[in-house]
Image (cartoon, rainbow over all chains, first blue to last red; front, side, top):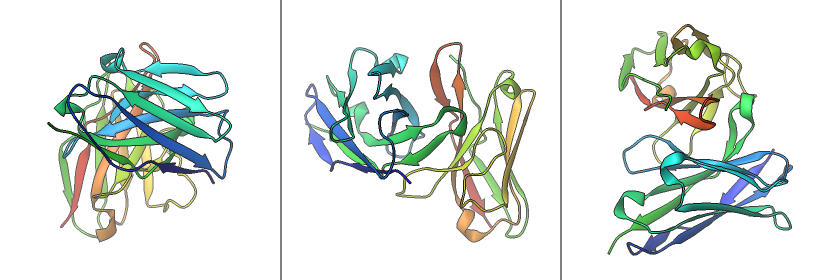
Length: 118
Length: 108
C-alpha cells in the first residue's frame, strides 16, 4: 500500500514562492498520476492538477496555470509542487494524492500547511 | 467549467440512513467518487466509480448515479460517520478534476 509523506509547514511572504514535497513509499511511483489538492481554511477541496511521473506529463487547473509547477524525482520517488507569486488566498493545506482515474484518489498525504502572511 | 452541487449539510439520527446528493449536468454519464474528511485529517476515499468500495470501507457505504444526480448512501449511520463528504468527477470536456463543495454530515 503506497504511503505519501509530505514536507513540513511553511510560512511565506506575499509575492514569494513555496515548494512542497511528497515522497512515495510502498508502491509504484512512476506509473500513476500524482494529483495535488489544496484546502483553504474552512473551505472545500480544490484540485490543482496532476503529473504522471513516468512521462513527466502535467495537467494544471485552469485558475492556477502560470503560477504552479509540478515536478518529480523518480530516483527518490518524490513529487513537488511549486507555487509562485503567493498571495494570502493561497493560504491552505496542500495535499498530494495518488490518482487512479476510475478508482479515484486512493491514497493521500497528510497535508502541508502553507501560510502566506506579511 | 463543470459544476457539482452538494447540500451544505445533512443531519441524520444514529441508525438511520443518510443520503448525500451531488448534482451535475448529466452526471450519470460520469464516474463519481466520494471522500470522507474528518476535522484535521486528510480525505479518505469511501466510494469509487459510483458504487464500489475500497478495501476497508464498511458495507454501510454505497452509492448510486443516474441522470443529473449521484448519491452517497450511508446505512446504519454511526457517530463516527460525522464528517465532511465530497463528491468528485473527471470532466473530460476540459480535462479537469472537479470536486463538489462538500456536505457536512451531522449525526444527531
